Image (cartoon, rainbow, N blue to C red; front, side):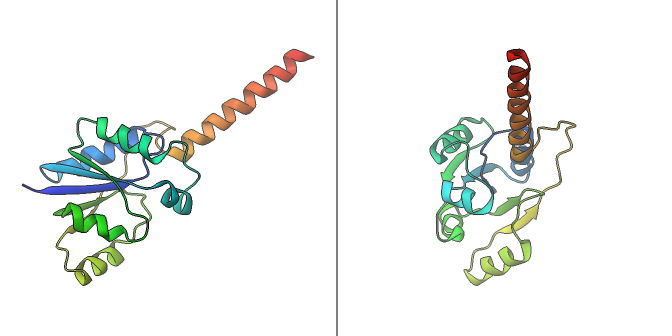
Length: 152
Protein backbone atom coordinates (compact mmCIF):
# COMPACT_ATOMS: atom_id res chain seq x y z
CA UNK A 1 0.00 0.00 0.00
CA UNK A 2 1.60 3.27 -1.17
CA UNK A 3 0.49 6.38 0.72
CA UNK A 4 0.76 9.75 -1.01
CA UNK A 5 0.64 13.05 0.83
CA UNK A 6 -0.53 16.29 -0.79
CA UNK A 7 -0.60 19.67 0.91
CA UNK A 8 -2.14 23.07 0.30
CA UNK A 9 -4.28 25.93 1.49
CA UNK A 10 -7.33 24.84 -0.56
CA UNK A 11 -8.93 28.19 0.26
CA UNK A 12 -11.29 28.47 -2.70
CA UNK A 13 -11.54 24.99 -4.15
CA UNK A 14 -11.08 25.01 -7.94
CA UNK A 15 -10.23 22.68 -10.85
CA UNK A 16 -6.50 23.20 -10.35
CA UNK A 17 -6.86 21.72 -6.85
CA UNK A 18 -8.89 18.78 -8.16
CA UNK A 19 -6.29 18.09 -10.85
CA UNK A 20 -3.49 18.24 -8.25
CA UNK A 21 -5.26 15.78 -5.97
CA UNK A 22 -6.14 13.40 -8.83
CA UNK A 23 -2.55 13.42 -10.09
CA UNK A 24 -1.24 12.87 -6.57
CA UNK A 25 -3.60 9.92 -6.06
CA UNK A 26 -2.29 8.31 -9.27
CA UNK A 27 1.11 8.00 -7.57
CA UNK A 28 -0.18 5.53 -4.98
CA UNK A 29 -3.07 3.72 -3.36
CA UNK A 30 -4.06 6.08 -0.58
CA UNK A 31 -4.20 9.90 -0.59
CA UNK A 32 -3.62 11.87 2.61
CA UNK A 33 -4.17 15.61 2.30
CA UNK A 34 -2.79 18.23 4.68
CA UNK A 35 -4.66 21.53 4.80
CA UNK A 36 -2.62 24.56 5.87
CA UNK A 37 -3.66 26.40 9.01
CA UNK A 38 -5.05 29.92 8.76
CA UNK A 39 -1.84 31.43 10.12
CA UNK A 40 0.25 29.52 7.57
CA UNK A 41 -1.97 30.74 4.72
CA UNK A 42 -1.67 34.31 6.02
CA UNK A 43 2.11 34.03 6.24
CA UNK A 44 2.66 32.43 2.83
CA UNK A 45 -0.23 33.54 0.63
CA UNK A 46 -3.07 35.84 1.69
CA UNK A 47 -5.82 36.33 4.24
CA UNK A 48 -7.86 33.12 4.00
CA UNK A 49 -11.38 33.48 2.67
CA UNK A 50 -12.48 30.28 4.41
CA UNK A 51 -11.54 29.30 7.97
CA UNK A 52 -9.21 26.29 8.31
CA UNK A 53 -11.99 24.02 9.62
CA UNK A 54 -14.17 24.84 6.60
CA UNK A 55 -11.28 24.13 4.23
CA UNK A 56 -10.47 20.88 6.03
CA UNK A 57 -14.10 19.72 5.91
CA UNK A 58 -14.36 20.53 2.19
CA UNK A 59 -11.28 18.41 1.48
CA UNK A 60 -12.65 15.56 3.63
CA UNK A 61 -15.79 15.53 1.45
CA UNK A 62 -13.87 14.85 -1.77
CA UNK A 63 -14.20 11.18 -2.71
CA UNK A 64 -10.62 11.03 -3.99
CA UNK A 65 -9.28 11.92 -0.51
CA UNK A 66 -8.74 9.02 1.89
CA UNK A 67 -7.47 11.03 4.87
CA UNK A 68 -7.37 14.76 5.64
CA UNK A 69 -5.47 16.60 8.35
CA UNK A 70 -4.88 20.13 9.50
CA UNK A 71 -1.19 21.03 9.29
CA UNK A 72 0.99 22.03 12.22
CA UNK A 73 1.98 25.60 12.96
CA UNK A 74 5.64 25.43 13.81
CA UNK A 75 7.12 22.38 12.12
CA UNK A 76 5.67 21.17 8.82
CA UNK A 77 7.60 17.91 9.13
CA UNK A 78 5.74 16.85 12.28
CA UNK A 79 2.64 16.04 10.22
CA UNK A 80 4.84 14.13 7.76
CA UNK A 81 6.12 11.99 10.65
CA UNK A 82 2.52 11.35 11.74
CA UNK A 83 1.17 10.47 8.28
CA UNK A 84 4.24 8.46 7.19
CA UNK A 85 3.78 8.93 3.43
CA UNK A 86 5.76 7.00 0.87
CA UNK A 87 5.47 9.93 -1.56
CA UNK A 88 5.02 13.67 -1.05
CA UNK A 89 3.35 15.22 -4.09
CA UNK A 90 4.05 18.89 -4.70
CA UNK A 91 1.88 21.05 -6.91
CA UNK A 92 3.59 22.67 -9.88
CA UNK A 93 3.38 26.14 -8.35
CA UNK A 94 3.83 25.40 -4.66
CA UNK A 95 6.57 27.44 -3.03
CA UNK A 96 8.26 24.40 -1.51
CA UNK A 97 11.88 23.83 -2.49
CA UNK A 98 12.28 20.14 -3.38
CA UNK A 99 15.97 20.05 -2.53
CA UNK A 100 15.36 21.54 0.93
CA UNK A 101 12.52 19.11 1.59
CA UNK A 102 14.65 16.12 0.59
CA UNK A 103 17.49 17.33 2.82
CA UNK A 104 15.16 17.83 5.78
CA UNK A 105 13.49 14.43 5.27
CA UNK A 106 16.88 12.73 5.18
CA UNK A 107 18.01 14.59 8.31
CA UNK A 108 14.89 13.39 10.14
CA UNK A 109 15.22 9.85 8.75
CA UNK A 110 11.88 10.09 6.93
CA UNK A 111 11.91 7.90 3.83
CA UNK A 112 9.50 9.62 1.48
CA UNK A 113 10.01 10.34 -2.20
CA UNK A 114 9.27 13.94 -3.30
CA UNK A 115 7.51 14.37 -6.66
CA UNK A 116 6.71 17.69 -8.36
CA UNK A 117 3.52 17.39 -10.43
CA UNK A 118 2.82 18.99 -13.80
CA UNK A 119 0.78 22.14 -14.33
CA UNK A 120 -2.96 21.89 -14.95
CA UNK A 121 -3.93 23.46 -18.25
CA UNK A 122 -7.69 23.30 -18.23
CA UNK A 123 -8.30 26.45 -20.22
CA UNK A 124 -10.10 28.34 -17.46
CA UNK A 125 -9.09 31.70 -16.06
CA UNK A 126 -10.27 30.47 -12.66
CA UNK A 127 -7.62 27.83 -11.97
CA UNK A 128 -6.05 29.62 -9.03
CA UNK A 129 -7.36 31.12 -5.82
CA UNK A 130 -5.77 34.51 -6.49
CA UNK A 131 -7.31 34.51 -9.99
CA UNK A 132 -10.74 33.77 -8.51
CA UNK A 133 -10.35 36.53 -5.92
CA UNK A 134 -9.26 38.94 -8.67
CA UNK A 135 -12.28 38.07 -10.80
CA UNK A 136 -14.63 38.58 -7.82
CA UNK A 137 -13.08 41.99 -7.11
CA UNK A 138 -13.44 43.00 -10.76
CA UNK A 139 -17.08 41.85 -10.82
CA UNK A 140 -17.78 43.72 -7.58
CA UNK A 141 -16.19 46.93 -8.88
CA UNK A 142 -18.15 46.61 -12.15
CA UNK A 143 -21.40 46.17 -10.21
CA UNK A 144 -20.65 49.22 -8.05
CA UNK A 145 -19.93 51.31 -11.17
CA UNK A 146 -23.20 50.15 -12.77
CA UNK A 147 -25.11 51.17 -9.65
CA UNK A 148 -23.53 54.64 -9.76
CA UNK A 149 -24.52 55.01 -13.42
CA UNK A 150 -28.10 53.93 -12.69
CA UNK A 151 -28.34 56.48 -9.85
CA UNK A 152 -27.63 59.34 -12.28
